[in-house]
Length: 84
Image (cartoon, rainbow, N blue to C red; front, side, top):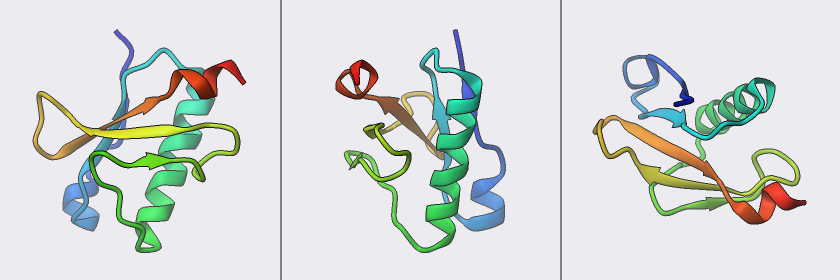
């Protein structure tokens, strides 16, 4: 299983940590997580159920609650954006 995740956002920023459990290129996964943290720092709210199209050009992300941790959000890359 692949898992890319942030650590410490809850304690440093009061925001849930983020995780990606899909087999993405490590550079793409890190770019997505960094950009999402940057947007959170700028005041953008990221919540379960959101579909984000402006984080990384050409990539559509879907946010959901992590099933195993209450202070974590899971980020999924939609199938449509992988085909482009």
